[in-house]
Image (cartoon, rainbow, N blue to C red; front, side):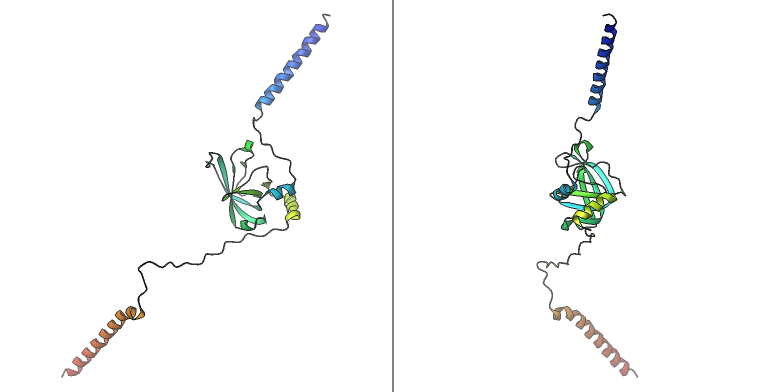
Length: 204
């Protein structure tokens, strides 16, 4: 009986120690970690409003948005558009929540190339880590091309046609009135030449 007591105490000590370590691990884990639905690439393609590849030229933020969420903003030099005919522009701006635990894109580096799967929200293009956005690896790009084709290259927007706005009360002058000052000066010049000619001939 006495020999089994130390073993019993040792067993209980190990159980308490294990429970304590497990509690520490759970406590140190993020309270609200990002959780994404397990979607296939075709499902992510269908869910996105636009898909394109490009290089991040500038990252800025976090800045507060209208709903007081901190947002990151990424300027992207687009090199290929796979979905979204109205997104065929050389430069696009993508925004994301500046919180990794909320599935935001916080670690995107400048001069790095990514595939962007974006959703429209008003005039903004939004992306997160669950929608498919990530480094433009060869394997992922090939799978995307197999689904969407080669895509299209971005084109700069066409220049706007100049618009002439008439100003109230500024009607154009008739041609005769525009030419009158010049004609008067010409007449004065001719009269001056005639006078000097007469004077020159009248001298002895």
